[in-house]
Image (cartoon, rainbow, N blue to C red; front, side, top):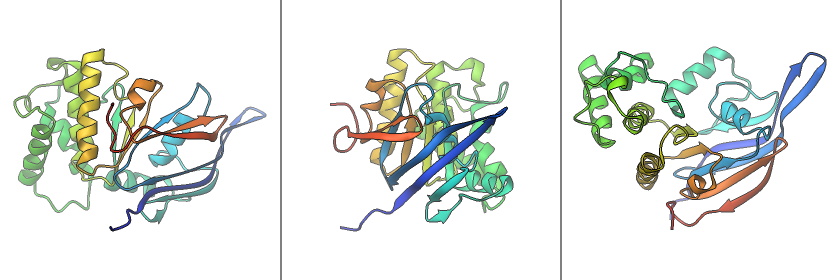
Length: 240
């Protein structure tokens, strides 16, 4: 059997914020590894460093020290322009608050990453076709012309999932993807993420909810900027 490669290799990651004369070590030597095709949850109490770790993994900031290898490339010391390129080409994002453009149809919201990807060989027509395919994949093929205010919270999150997938990212980062949803809609979104995981999508999710984390392969727990423990949640993801 072919060995799966590591999508994420974070080694002794440190992130220090200067708060006046005080240094705050939001990450204090955190090391993690995530394999291709894994579905992993990151949990921890307030102040544990999980949001900072997510920002580093998402190339929204660089670590103060340590190594971050993403899909075989050392991105630890890249500048903001290079990080933006990596984000656009290799990562998909799902946010708690959806982050959709208001008064903009679902189709156009999903096309955005393709529009900003200057290396994309797709024509405008091909971009539209691909965005429609992604919306159909998340069950919104009949909502492509609907604006966010015309969609339920669960439907808006499905649009954001389609947007996260449209650039064929090596990894999807989900930040509290069910945080603004009722329990039924939240369960539907998690079932959708599990289905994507089973199709080979690598997903890293920050959550505060143990029931949501139980959908994943394993949970990485942070405490005081360090990985305190890891828990396996069952083979293949999904609640038992």
